[in-house]
Length: 531
Image (cartoon, rainbow, N blue to C red; front, side, top):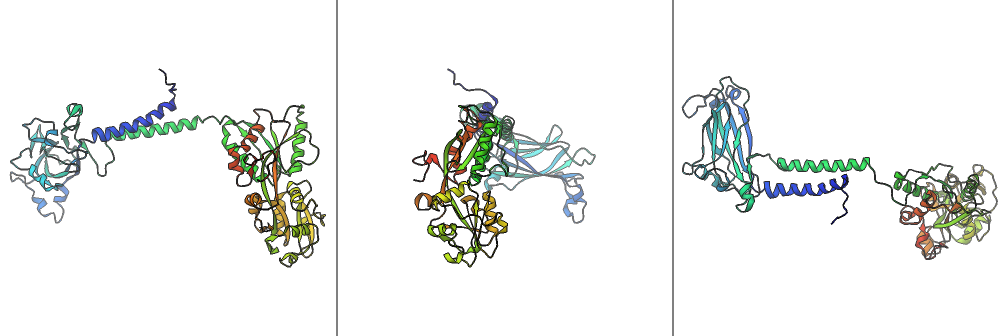
């Protein structure tokens, strides 16, 4: 029966990433960790220089057990320990029952002049080093110095130390000697089953604060290499893009009010679909206004000679509200609605206006802020050009379909600080800059751009905040539905269609959420108005 498992490199590495740590755990704690007899050589140093140093005292007169003065002595301190998880008992030492010695330590080119047990972890351990018990002593084996240690019962973490004085037998005053050789085997089991009968471990060198045995380190290293190989494989062979990603170049046009949201969405789409080869060039001239954007889209479709019934695959435009003018080939889709706000220079001294006060100001009937409770400054109206979606929404939803007064100057920098006046600009960014720079200036913008502008105050209308909550739950009047336009129906499989789909699903909520409410989330998405 086939399980349908594809044995590619990623699958093999993934399986090893599970098997290796389990094997390491089982080996380290189930096998090695059960019975582990360890040793450390904590000191092995020549005593020649020390014995001839000032104040050496008795070190100059070290004798062996035959009364001969040592001429080239060295000191060795050994630590014997139970480094496993189970006690080590006499029967675990793999020597004959008649042999009382469990551990043998040999020293090449040296003989043992004396040895003593010190620092047992439990006083009871001293009872194993008596003449009655046997197995402890020193001598010679095959020309090398020998220390014999008995079959000591060691509980978990128990230890003892052996301090020995050795004499060189080489006759050439060697400056170093080979490391001591430890010989001892212990059974790997607990007295039952195959592990006790067939598994044994040699005495192993241990270290202070030890993490794992050498095999354990091998397992951990293999695991680390597996992870690095898998990471390298993923880097060298990136995953294919999601199925709804389409590559190519997409040109965007339209609303400066909706620009921050669309920019963020374009960045998110590029990041998500980078493997598909996406280009969405966005410059300072990309968004020039709703009317200009629709005109640019209309021109791109005509330049590409798109036949009736077909659509342009790589251009989209965004408009605040329905398109103005005659654009018979453009098809609209409501995307979201978002709040707009009146913005006032912070020197004006106002934070809230009644709707009738707003209409009176834009009609030119109120010309100083002091008339509506503000500072004694003239009002300067900074508005967008006709055709701007932000201005259209202001006229339709706040000003009772009456246009603001005509400009008094053609350039906002020509406004006289001491007298009332009005001017018009082309983009939201320019409007916000002028409103912040001219004392007493009043403008209009989408909320997110206004919140990032220093020097201006976002006005409430009839005490309602310029927020989505204010639009949906209160009577805040200044908002608009944002529409996406394509030239004809965007072809299936085109980047224009893919980006529109991206804006209308969960990804769109993540990118547009701070700015607007998706039409797909309201009761009547075809109308896309607040509930």
